[in-house]
Image (cartoon, rainbow, N blue to C red):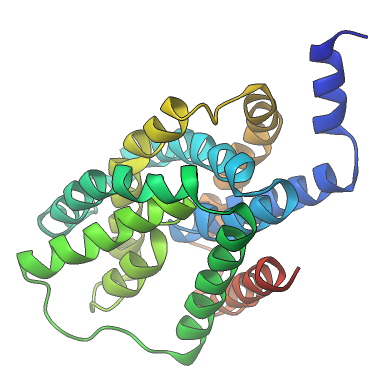
Length: 251
């Protein structure tokens, strides 16, 4: 059996493959429904299964393709005045954050990812939101913080989601804003892992196996958006986030 077949066998078989498939399906439903959830859920789980340097690049590749899938419908609903500065600042800061992914201790980075997701889930559960205005300077600062997180952990969501959900806009506008933001930084986020040699055969094989599951789940989640009450989704999503963060932190 040649090396390629052995690599495919290792990716497809085992409990870690089953766990990754289940997590990917749930993340796709969250992303399609709410406009976020892919990185926040999959970054801690993939990092626990395979380590941050193997797990985060898989998630980043799939995030790029999901963003392309969702973007056309979201463009008309998004508030570009707010989102474009956020995305520009994040794109500049992402390569700086990627230094941590390439050089930090993998075990420490996994626990940091878990702690961030757990804290984010608990903040959402508490009902806290930023209630101030959105001036350009603050947009740039939040975007830069999100970019640093994106480069280091694969997750740009926590600061941006808390920031964008603060407004009084309807759920459709919130969802479109998040989709546009994630699309703006999706391309730049894969550059550093590619240059750092992290996009190896195992990463590409895992992404190829998991991507169809994610894309199908995203489509299902998008169709559920007009049907499933937001309060039901919110309870489910928060439980999943807290659980994923706890596993990555304590495993």
